[in-house]
Length: 370
Image 1 (cartoon, rainbow, N blue to C red):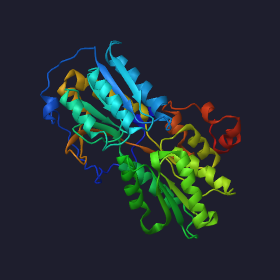
Image 2: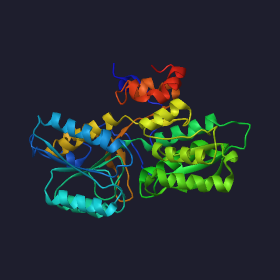
Image 3: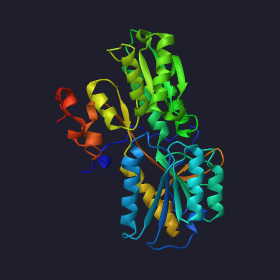
Image 4: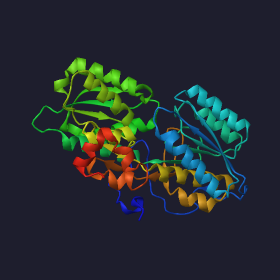
């Protein structure tokens, strides 16, 4: 049985943050999509714009899964045109314009800078090309949005850190947030802070440029210098890549008993750090579900099938420029030593042999991961 169906979502509350969410549940709620007539058959061209390569998920999971699903949905006749901006907002604008010029049928856009790309989204709309915001909510007249529930992510991180802290200590933490250009980062931060509340003292807080592990490492070194490594009881890290930079900084400072560190994305190295006790938790986001649903949305929108499209977008979100955007939000799960097998292993993200290499074999044996 698919574990994605078997697991019960840990959070069921709709978001009341920057994205105002409201369950819709009624087909045909989107007037534009609902009134569209079929315009394409299987000869669909999907433009896929992803933001970076530093986070392993985009090229390892998202792009190949979307490509495979589009192929399945179009009987092998559809095409995915792919471009990765490698954290360069200006380059992404150029990539988007090229896809407009090449007259793709629909765009899946994961923005480097959600605000900066708005003019490009408008150009696509003017050219009659629907844009679906993927993973990050781009500004401008997008047709739909698909992502994980970002409030759930921040809640899982903040709750886990609050629960694991040693109550006999001062509970000073360092907060390593994501990039200010990514609207998701603000949502993770706000939700995490709501869970942490007055249970901790935030000794230092950083917004990490471009989500880069090297920038997180530099920030952490500055925090250690300011606070003292022995006074840091926990670290909120918004994702796994930055958690790796944080661990590196702590080790460089001579710390052998690492404080609890959060993360997100369930990257392989992060799962291995969790097994080894170097990172406390991550947030597992089922990439196949997000990517496959995005492909279904893109093909349905390109074909103009209103009922099919609306059935996939029963949530609503607001961006700074648009309201009541049709959306699909995917549930997430916290990942710790206790549920590695039921999450990333059962869902086929990693094999036990991928995680339990010779370096981690003893740690895996200790937690019964075989």
